[in-house]
Image (cartoon, rainbow, N blue to C red; front, side, top):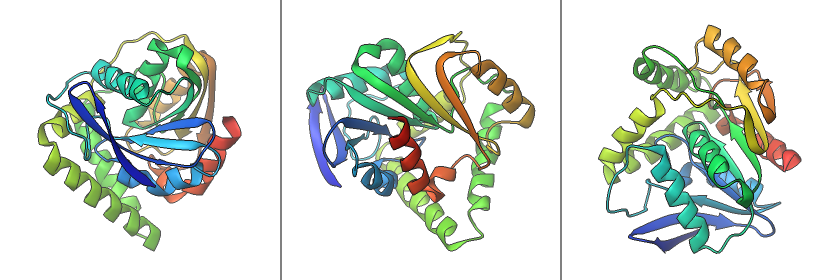
Length: 250
């Protein structure tokens, strides 16, 4: 994939791009950058013009950190404008699903369809979210230790996230707090046609919360929910499978 930068207001945003045709914007998940999504982006570029922006992360340069989702949404909006993109498909994964969902609410007219992975469209009212995040990542790394592909994935995450931490230490901390904040949005309609892939064995969501969350999401219009028998980060081990699901929906 091609590495580029674009000046957006006072920020210089790094992004990867490949392919041609209708534009698909893929947002990296918590603490990692576009570097972790090169394979998935390359798979999707067989059908779309794929753009993976590093909003508040990676090689991007920004003059201030942020503690709220709206700044991510605004930066993404300005990034889209800077590249003169009129309509596009949007993919949000894990933490970036929060950003993608809020973007769809605020700028629905610019999005054709929205695809969410290992996230939710309703607030997760979970106690001790920060502890669950820490133990969830420990479980996630553990589940990958029993195969060559899993170990390779762990090394990719660790290498990418460490480099991101070195570049943007404060923003990494703020992003962790954002990911574990409680939101009380009463979502009844997704504004744009949306598909959400929900992992049955998600390390970050207790079983009782998972069941309750699925019940709530099934009541939301414009939202198709599919439950897969995988762990939270299944898509890194099955990127070709995820790419096919995205293509089929879009």
